[in-house]
Length: 238
Image 1: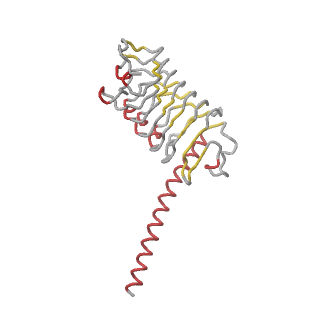
Image 2 (image 1 turned 180 degrees about the vertical axis):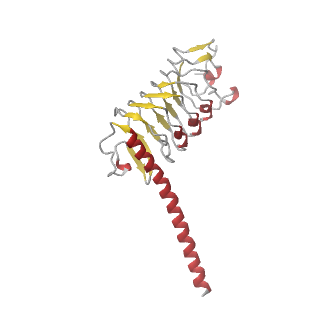
Image 3 (image 1 turned 90 degrees about the horizontal axis):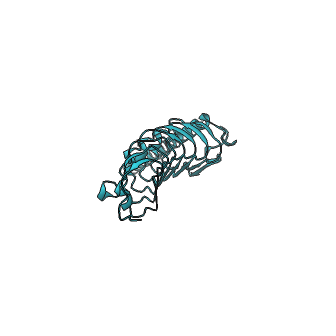
């Protein structure tokens, strides 16, 4: 009897753990489904298969790995409207590419919840307002492309926390202020991975940081048509 009770107790524990795990997993998936439905309702000119009768993982531009969305690639679809405020509740998304559309409004701060994202491309749209400082929470970001929009405000200091960032494209915007520290740790920055920095055709001002030219892997730095000033270093590590 004791053995039977012990076995029954173990079965109960295992069943409970399985149930709780299922609830957690289904809860996370439900969050992503709700976010995608919000996106579907907020935007126009989406592909025709974006409908309630189709699983979001089967929508054009959406790629899933199991029960989680990993890729959202909807560039060059002439999509218009504003992204919903909850756009960003994706635990496993790797790439979000909405470039070359007509999406307007602010960039959702919920994008800071994308803990696994490596590439964010919102270029060639009509996004406005400021760059969310919450993007600095996306520690795996390697590429940020927000160029050719109507963004204003400052470049968030939090972008200096992105130690894996290789490409930063902010050109052709109305952003101002100074360039935050993005250089190597010895000169105040935290990033030594940067290869491309383009802030041309903006209102960024202030002196040109010498740390930009001490980055080990940098290939392109475009500061043209800004209000930055100062002499370039005699020796450039490029």
